Amino acid sequence: MSIVDTAVETAPTNAQSRPSSAEFSLRRQTWRRCCRDFNRPIHSCSSHVSEESGSPLASLSASGRGWGRGLRFAFGAYLVARVAFSAWSLVIALLFPVVLQNLDLFGAPVLAVFDLASSERYVYSREMDGAMLTFRAGERGYVVDAQTGSNWSLRDGRAVSGKFVGRTLGASAYSVEEIFPYHGMAVEPNPLLALWQRFDTNWYLAIATRGYAADGSTVYFPLYPFLIRAVSAVIGNAMLAALLVSNLALIGVLVMLYRLTETLFDTASARRTVAYLFLFPTGFFLLAAYTESLFLLFVVGAFVFGQR
Image 1 (cartoon, rainbow, N blue to C red):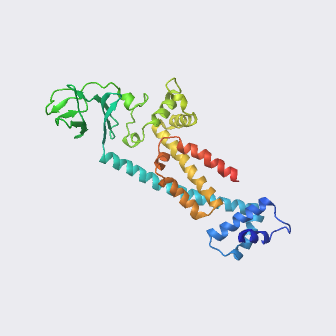
Image 2: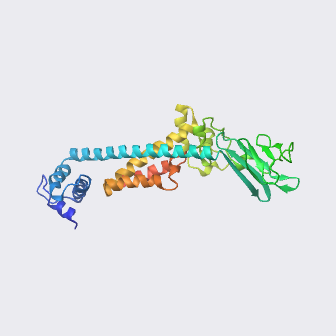
Image 3: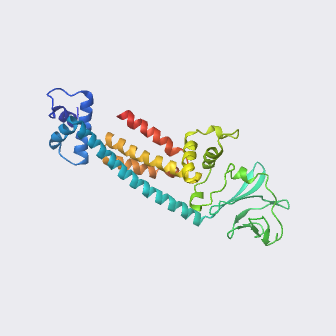
């Protein structure tokens, strides 16, 4: 038996009887909060334990203070992470406004270009007169081939200067939708929101907007798209609704994770746990329009109520 357990056993109570296991557990948690959170010596926590364990109102008050601490720290951590990741995404968009790939898809040479600022997508064949061209990004809206230095417009695939001036790149064997799938969803006009309209986000938006179909959408669970549809009915923007659902769920995750860790360990551990969640290399997915935050909300919630 630890020093804290021994002290809890001998702490004064309102009834002169041996405490039950539930009461003993409550006293031990209260003692640990007293000694660790408030840096009090063990002997000075005796009355504190007696008061909180003996009074349901005092216990409820202590629990409320704990949730309040969790809410304040979790919301502060969320704001810091939200600002940091948003700034990071804007920096990436400014430094690398165009994503260009020279692909070889099952023998088909494909030039695939995505404009991060406008979300415009371009796909052309890299073959010209029997030769395979390799491209790099040029000025905004243009690419340059490494073989001849010709300058090509992304808008229509036509060379505006160089050896191939006046020539036009051929159509790709793969469509734009096959390379950059949006699943029939329109590009979000707000560039700050469009930065997050990527990959599976378009699946969730499509399900929320049109429902399920025989297009592979049935592999996605319905709760997240249902919440997107419900919120978008109020605010009128499905992309914004998706981000709101994910981010509100994330705040709930942070509050419960903080409180659970503080209850099992101490305040310092709770703060580190919340920080580590964001510092994890894929932590930014929790802020995106994905299901991870909603999933974690139920997982952490199950542990919180299981612990209680």
